[in-house]
Length: 215
Image (tube, rainbow, N blue to C red; front, side, top):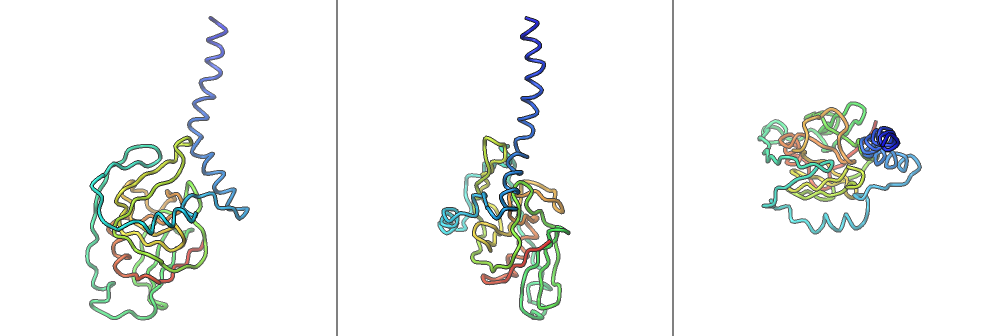
């Protein structure tokens, strides 16, 4: 009996430690892979791009959402019109492009050298956000996003992700209704924004708009 109790005292804390750290195991191998030029993220695969292309952009009736293996509440926040940004009051002052500063956790809407708008974001925590230059290749008003690992506690299955602008394979700029920690890394590699602010960028940007991501 004493031996069993001793084993339990030793094993249980270790087990709880492993379970608590499993998300960080996932994060560690994602970030380590990126350092050596290997992308383990499922959203970087050709199959995921095919999945994106199959999406219609329409609202799904199924609103059961999971983030980090937990059920989260769905909120459909619609962006408000911004005439000063959307060109209804003034014409764009130059080529539209998007700058994402990972160090500041901010997104800037640019028109030439002029900043038309800036917003807090959440970039990759559980998997890194790639740096580089791309162009938006598709826009979806709503889409479902899936990925992560159930075994390691980072699984997500999120219907009706709003205002999504994919620019690098499955990496995109989009609204996030499942957290409110903007200004800090929270994502699996995408650029999270408040849904209503993502909508402003969504309306302003076009397919083909340049996206530059840097630290």
